Image (cartoon, rainbow over all chains, first blue to last red):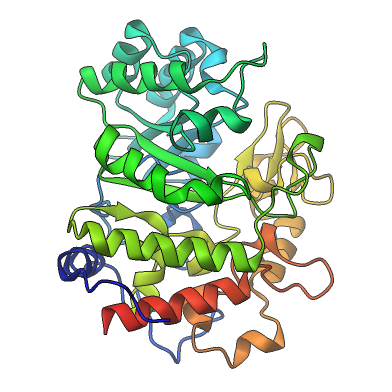
Length: 64
Length: 312
């Protein structure tokens, strides 16, 4: 199925927001973890999960 | 609290859930805040988030949440028809009016709550009108879609409300198309952000995409600790109880370790998948008991591909 509308502005906004996120290459595995991931459990944060309270789309400090 | 701040040294994030967490009352949160203040170390970032249906939010509550820097998320499935379909008061009436009143109360004080929109087989049919409701009527710039999955449909009222792969594929396609049509660079829908991250080779912030399951925990009212609230109440998933063991022993204990190993294990199908490192077999709580595969694998792969065509 082809997308119905190009929506360049929306796509540009999405890419800009995601630009601060660490890269994940195709070669990386769960065992090694993508670059930029910490092995220290205490460093972890989580905005996924069963909540979405961050009204600000800018990722929090730490570039997660 | 003392132990918690010893483990999470740089950043501590508390997400208050229920049931309805505001029923605990302001004194409960004042106690929690004073304990956070007492045990946190200098330089530690402490955040409080609360996920509420907003029906109890009046001016005093809104002032309280603002004063204490709570980030607020509300559960709002859409317009009056969608919200009242399943989110009813104890007396059986719809909660839409009270939820919107709470939302407006917060907005009047400058709090912009986040929104979780849960989608069922009934409300999936109304997605387009609810998209307009959020963007035009409420004027929000972002929200999150929660899928009511068919494994969670254990409440008699919710039987047959779990989305199929076909439903979900259609939902995400429709959502992307509406988002494109809206063409607002600041419109941030969590699911599109997650799929978008995979498409452009970035790390998603969402645990059901980035493989971070197991680096999070849920503490229940009775002291039980689970990997997350999606497992809450499942006796097979409990890691331990805070009244019987130390937090450190539970979080780094054998049960937690086994859970993490299991959550990171990929079925054979995943190994060759293009999206492997951006999907990580989805949410651990939404995996087939036999195959251990993410139940919405088909919809997820189709959505990644669809969005890739858009971004190209």
